[in-house]
Image (cartoon, rainbow, N blue to C red; front, side, top):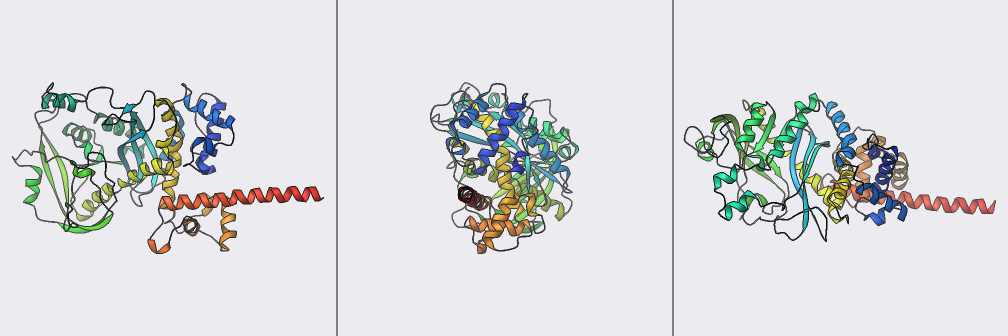
Length: 467
């Protein structure tokens, strides 16, 4: 689709022929992003051209993604509300033999990680695009944790080793330099970011951030976080939605990774300013204490046999009013959009099933799918817009096909996408359609259009023969 092509068309790959090849690849893949590459490309020549492209040592993923990043910055500037940058890492696991990849924690499969920075509109949680991506591998060196388990290092020594947490700091620093809208964005991070050094760096650089606390940290008054909040009275309660979460490796020992069904729940809210105490394992260059605001969210009545959710959000955002506190909670809840984004990449685009052998070719392939995954996820948000023009998101030929099929006048993007959702199997009583059902509906609509084109070509040929 032309809307996706615009996310690639300004790519500077050093050769116009390479840019032309990239646009051709995107045109083939977007028709059915879940298909294997032999199925997606129309001929063996096109397939071979794709393999040569992703394996080209002079092509880097950052060059493929640069136009998408610039388009994302423009979309951010057009928003009149706060912008959230959700940061998170996802592991991509591949079957079979691969070159130059790391391994999973059990060492049985090849894998690598992508650390993503996804821009999201705070008002409606619309994904605006990916601003940053850092790919890295594990398994090449023994981790500090493994060295500590073997008795080679003490706990303090292992904590002083270089940490992967630095990638969060680097991502936030680099994004803040891109534009004024990026500089003023709120960076939202999960509990992996709970590091005294990182919190101090973010505060000293005056970045806006919301970090999910992981530890019951010591305070300068001699207490710990949970003890301090136990003495505070509830400020207010509210209903929030918890997203569904699948069980992950290590879930039996980590309550953050256990399986959870989606549900609405009532939580009690507490908030106050606290002063964290620097622990002995933190570099002495950091101050002995750090003033920071903390918001506690505690589930009141969890389902039977489930532990209540408990979030501690650490931030320098104001907490003077209920409105301030609710904004912090809403910003953190927006982080779940990036989890859906990973699902689109892995399920909608079948990225982990790609039969490419090297780390370099897999990264370049990922660069092709990132804007496509953003577009698919964005469809869900556009389904809630009542007054947008449908031509902005659906090509006119497909729109005309849909109008003929439904025998209805479809004037808004809301009406169009709900009809597409019906093609994908959506039932209107099940609430708003998600990206997956919209994606299925688009595939069905595109198949109808291709069938119409083939039938029209056959009839045209017969008319010519008869004349």
